Amino acid sequence: MPPALANEISANGMSGERRGFLKSTFLAAAALATGPSLAASAQQAVGDSMILEPRPWSTKLGYPVAFKPYGQPSPFEANLQRRQSPGLTQTTQASVSFAPLQGFFGIITPSGLHFERHHQGWVDVDPEQHRLMVNGMVEEAKVYTMDDLMRLPSVSRIHFIECGANTGMEWGNAAVPTVQYTHGMLSCCEFTGVPLKVLLDDCGADIKNARFVLAEGNDGSSMTRTISMESALDDVLVAWGMNGEMLRPENGYPLRLVVPGVQGVSWVKWLRRIEVGDKPWNSKDEASHYVDMMPDGIHRQYTSIQECKSVITSPSGGQALMGKGFYNVSGLAWSGRGQIKQVDVSFDGGRNWKTARLETPVLDKCLTRFNIDWVWDGSPVILQSRATDSTGFVQPRYRQLREVRGTRSTYHNNAIQSWQVAQSGEVFNVQMD
Ligand code: MTE
Image 1 (cartoon, rainbow, N blue to C red):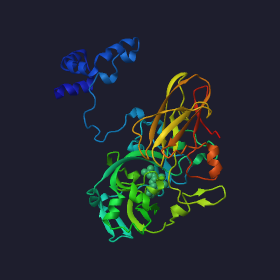
Image 2: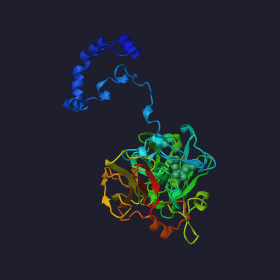
Image 3: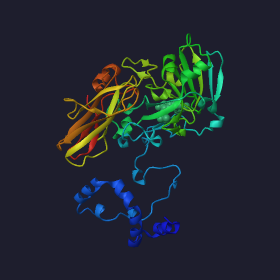
Image 4: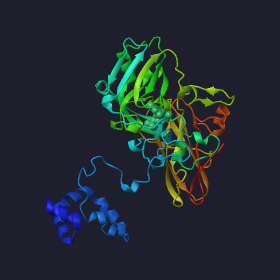
């Protein structure tokens, strides 16, 4: 199209004359693109001005390519945001933002909506000035630049990350209204990096005698976590990539540890050092935080695996059904011990269960999307999901979890979540035994 015509259409919209010009130019291409089924459905839309009248955006030129060199979501999706829970923490630096699980499809978390958990704020690290040191029980301690690391053989894997404190506010009773707040310290991305084993081999780690590694971050929080050598040699990654691009600063740019299946605190961000050793370090985030208060009053330390868990994300708390009829009930299931084998859904508060469809891919230590058809008859119901993983572990009811764990914990709550659908269609967070 001549630039003058393009400018004029942008400024003044599309007149009948200009429409005729464009019609002759693009008719053949449009026919190919739409196909015959569009005509059939158009006839059914009799009387709907949204389909009969041209919409404003269809009468003028759109924005040019690369208008936004880094693409952004539609402004109509502006409500889908990570959110803080007001009053949850004393400062916004040592705090958490929750991912809007209710608005996600499939299993991948969009990078800009990944939950955040920082102990002392997030930092913008210059990759040129970033180093990773591997020391301790190694033949030769080494310091790697980002360039050094990114030359090494890398792998890409999709895994969930869940903060050990996810669902922590719900130990006593149903405390928060939406799935974003009950379960939103959960995300799932494709991570790219070098297996930690490659670095341990490169430095000649004494894997016969060493039993642990310590991961240390480069922010002000002195985040250090002990990780078993078994994990370190298995599937732990030193990662720079997330969803096909470099990590976002909030998630540890330029380097973080990915510890599949293990609680988020061990996924040390802005990773600067790996020390190889023969006993756990008992650091502050292992001795006074991320420990489980058991019924006998003793703290359980080093609980790391995120056990099998699931939640219905739609419909979920804060949403409202638009009248009786068909709904696709959809949710997420995951296990730090392997794959999801089955998800059952109850529409009557746990008396009867139906097996949901697991959507592919179903991967190890990764979110699995489940769906199940439902016809709502308009009466009040309680929806629940219950996941089973490849080890045969079945997600517990609250009563079962409390029998073992009591009620004074903060971390590792994987109980079955209940959503009550009221006659009005509104959905509420309720807790069932
Ligand atoms: N690493 C450093 N260096 N500093 C931190 O504050 N927070 C940890 C972990 N790694 C943290 C860290 C916690 S508690 C969690 S749950 C995850 O990072 C959160 O990762 P995310 O912010 O990418 O969601």
